[in-house]
Amino acid sequence: MPISTPLTRALGLAHPIIQAPMAGGSVTIEMIAAVCGAGALGYISAAYSTPAQILEMGRAVRGRTPNPYAVNLFVALPIPDMPADAQRALDRLAPFHAELGLAPPALPNDVKEPFAEQFPAVLDSGAKVFSFTFGIPPREAIAAAKARGIFVVGTATTVPEAVQLQEAGVDAVIAQGSEAGAHRGTFDSPFESAMIGTMALVPQVVNAVALPVIASGGIMDGRGIAAALALGAQAVQMGTAFLVCDEAATPEVHKNAILAAYGHETRLTQAFSGRHARGIVNKAMASIDGGAPGFLPYPLQNALTRPMRTAAAKQGRGEFLSLWAGQGARLARRIPAAELVARLVEETDAAVCAVSALQAR
Image (tube, rainbow, N blue to C red):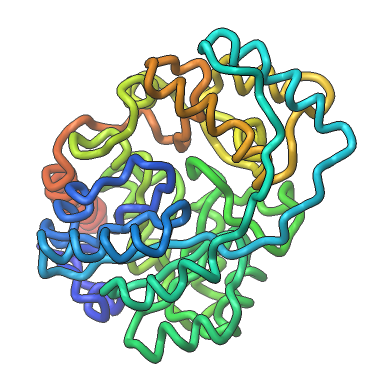
């Protein structure tokens, strides 16, 4: 039986399932269209895209499906000064560059925050939903999106962050638990105090805000969706589960690593971007994280490691990639995205029925 919530009805979705925005190239137009076509919500991951690319991706998605889709950006953060000990970060990367046949690493220059340039394109992208992470954009941006009939969603990792998002005027809140893969969305708490699991975070956010809550972090199958709905969430956002789908452009070595990894083989690192993110432990992560700090602050480190990560993806060298994955990685399935959505729907129904059957005994 299809599950309907106020959020799915507001967005015109058949199912309370959202494919997470995963910046970096894994999300393809084909996957977005397949997810949307299956009745879930697909995301254009636009954080690293130019305005022209955002507009083109919007046109491409609209050309493949009439169903609603979403777009995501990173909130603009101040660009930090280059630290005095920046050479240490170069020294950590130098051996990896040599192994990959690259020139020695060089400090990034002219790093910019693109939100102000990207946002007008989001307004013209045709997206039904605009979401953001790493903070709260200017109130004028939120108002501009809502004036265009775009549903606005913010990301929170604590209850106070969720309350701030509500006060800023968003339409829904993503409660991102600490199990989630890739970057943490924390913006108003020390990182360590925002490490709250999805099971604990979601019901507290539901109690704290008068908005639809979307559960995110460690949800990989229908059992997780049913659990999130029982906690009061009106939908779930899933990233790692979609990274291994047939349509995903995730490097083959990354897909294989996800399928083979258990939850304890992931950990949080600043090695690849300078910002805490969860991924599968590998050689680069262990080396850069080891000993004294050997990385630049975000987004400088992200720019610094990009040549290494790009070359590693082309060469199939997983030991130098940012193997982003959540703690539920082992539950991933390598199937087409539409089939994944269909299975998730069936599993959710089965999980709900199983719990109902317990009450009948």
